[in-house]
Length: 349
Image (tube, rainbow, N blue to C red; front, side, top):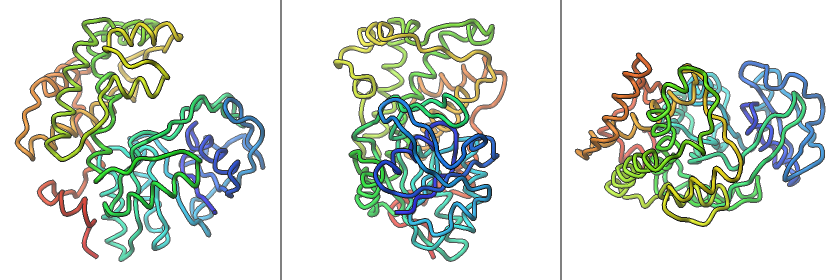
């Protein structure tokens, strides 16, 4: 199969390497060009998979999409909207697109863009990337871990099982279909932990003080994370989803025995340090609010569900950061009142 990978941070090249190892051909494109700088005809791979992977580096996105039978988009949430607007006119009718991960309700944005062009394609929304990876050098990526059972939803919703099988064929992992893309948006348990840690360590972050996130998962922080997670799970249940609780997700991601969160925090700290962000301009912290907690509040308001602690956390983080954190560009043009029908069928053609 010919796969176009759009995004060349760490996940994109690592996913490309795995697909190549399974006999697929891959074109790799970087939205700004920097991600592919230094990659020649082959990408060096270390970690779980070691060796080299032959990839076609595409300077132009149209070249990456040429003859593609599937497309994987893996870019940060702040870049996802601009990338989808840029590539939508070049996507071929019927070619499946996988967002790895999906952010907010991005599948509906892409579906709307395709509908405006008279085209359609199944769009997959992965709750998390299928792997953990780091970029060791311009031409080297280290694959740290592969994730089994990643949740994947789709627009239209009925396409989820087929896209789960497509992802399994590409990456050799199991994927768990979800009823609709709201499930993928609510499955981002990391936003809960990021928010709790940011509130409890704001002065360390602001002062650029080196700190260990696992070591700072104190009992108080764990209590806050547990209660935020309870509101996330309650909203999911109200919307018809049974999602993975935070401790279960951490157990699967880190190979730990599931236990109360405070006890798991000690086990995580013993595994090794996880450096915390330095500076209030750390993009992923704001994105956890914008495309995580703030999105959940919008969904909850539309359904009449109260999330008082989540609302308070967003307000406190906005006060600490001194700026609004709720501007979700991936919801552009979306009528939340039409959400159930859009999730099921996509936008009218």
